[in-house]
Image (cartoon, rainbow, N blue to C red; front, side):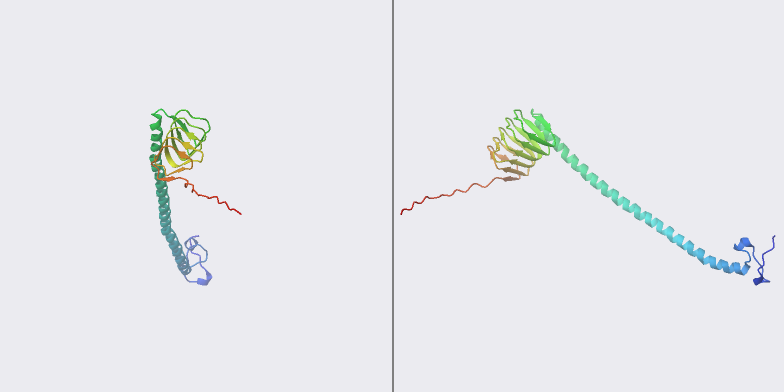
Length: 217
């Protein structure tokens, strides 16, 4: 049982055990040649594994770097949003509080249409405010867009982007635009328009003199 296996083709040469070469009938030389064949293959496999191992950390580094960039970008966007929120909300709150402390009624919403006559001073906080009913008091309005389509018998304090006094609309007091960019007056303002970056009024109508010519026969 312990004797080496001898292949007739390699008579007289010391044999090797099957467990040494992995196959019966292989001699020492064939084992050596077999080892030579397997050796480079093994080294090639090892080289491939080494290459794969070296590329793996590189891939991990690229993945981690991309994740870090995404995280930094997200934090920057979030920081900007928070910063804008911190800047805008207190300003908005202070505007409403200032007039509430003077006895103004606070009215909030997304889109506010004033369709019922107003007899008490009020502060409106919304995206869009449309005043369609007469107002017999002062108004404070914080909105992106405000439209006056009726008569306001008082002053208007406005904080927002655009205030439009439509044709037929009247503001008998002052319009104080606090940070407003545009006040467009197509109707009438009895007082002054103060603080607006731009004031737009319709052009004055041109006066044309027409002479009636009487021609005789």
